[in-house]
Image (tube, rainbow, N blue to C red; front, side, top):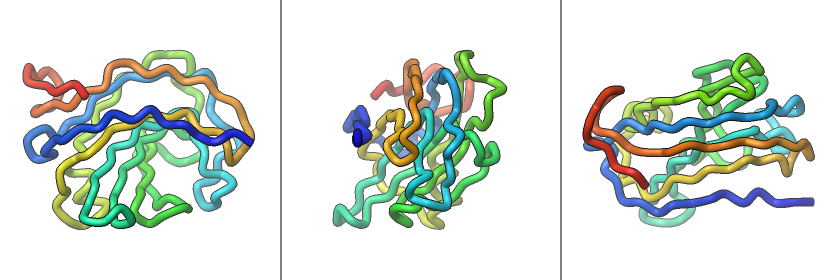
Length: 160
């Protein structure tokens, strides 16, 4: 059985100053066996993680932006592996497969909404195509990922 291998970039970013995460991605298909309620179904064709370290490793928090098959777009759920990780479906279904899609999320507002507190400094961003639980296959492509101080059209941005 293969294990997921995220590509991780360590960063130190204040989400209050750079709240906007922007990226592009493309997938060849979604995973039909996805089922966020079970560990055996916790796979997605594409994921972009933002990781917020805290005092101890086990208290770390993560937001996991996914291209889902069955989760409704803009819905969120706790990871079946840990309550410190929340999954948010930013794309869902096959409507945009094989097309480059640009996404924009306010990570500051998302963190406050899903965890109910102010976020600590952002400590990392990661990408991952993950099929180890469902034993499916997928191909995903990821474009530039950056943090911005303003919504779309802003000049000031930080590339991890």
